[in-house]
Length: 135
Image 1 (spheres, helix red, strand yellow):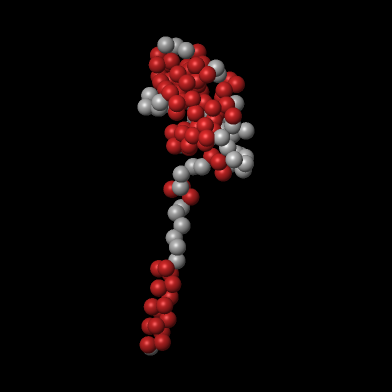
Image 2: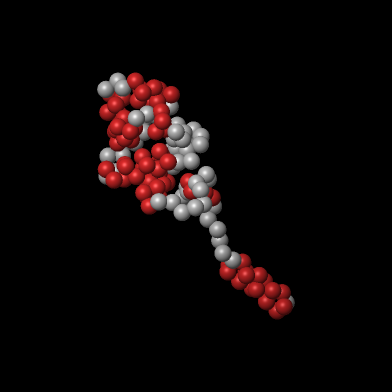
């Protein structure tokens, strides 16, 4: 009986010391694990990637549609001024009846993208740089 009790206690000690891993769905999205090159990146690209991961990746992927459109080649589809104004306040463009903004809004079931008025000019520039240079 003591031998069985000892084995039982050892078993639970081993289990309790085992490192628990977080489920995948609780881990933050890391776009660098997908298609980013392994070589060193310039700091501006890293800053832009960080902004993408924290501000955009919940709804967007570079390679495919998710809640919002794919962002691969987005800088080729829209000019910089328009794209940054859409990121900052897309509802303003929709209210002004901007055709590109209306088209995106309608395509995605009239679900508005949150505005990002809190992003600084530098953060917007870094994000745009990341989107423009994504490979």
